[in-house]
Image (cartoon, rainbow, N blue to C red; front, side, top):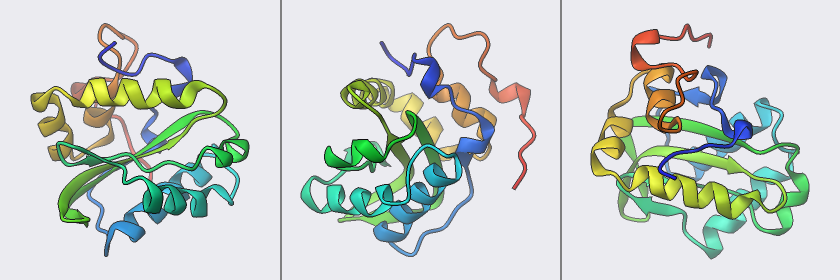
Length: 164
C-alpha cells in the first residue's frame, strides 16, 4: 500500500490548506487541530492531546513532513477518521527540522496505526514528498496522497475550486 486507501480518508478540498504561515511548531499543530475540528472529525479536547503527543513522541517523519495526532486516550474524542493537510511554503521549525507539510490525523478505533503506516509508505517516495512540499493547491495535494489507481480522485489538472 503506497497511499491512503480507506474511504474514510478520502481527502476533499475542504481538508487541504496551502500557502500557510505558522509562527512555530505549536502554531502549526493548532492550525491542524482547528482544521480537524472544522471538519467535524474531533471533539475540542483533541487539540490539547495533539500537543501532549508531540511532547512525548515527536511527529516529524522526514522529507519535510510532520504528522501531529492525539494521544491514545484521545481516540475517544475522534468523531470520524480524517486527515487535515496543511502546506507551509516557508517552512516551520520543528525541533530543528524544516517542515513544509503538516498532516493532522484523527483516527478512531484501531485505524490509527493503519493511517500512520499508509502515510509513511506514501511519503517515503522522495519525488512524491518533494512534490507535496511544493504543492500550491488542494487538487495537487489530493492527487499526491490518493491511492494508486484511484481514478475517482481529482488530479492536479482538475484544479478543484477552493473556497476559503
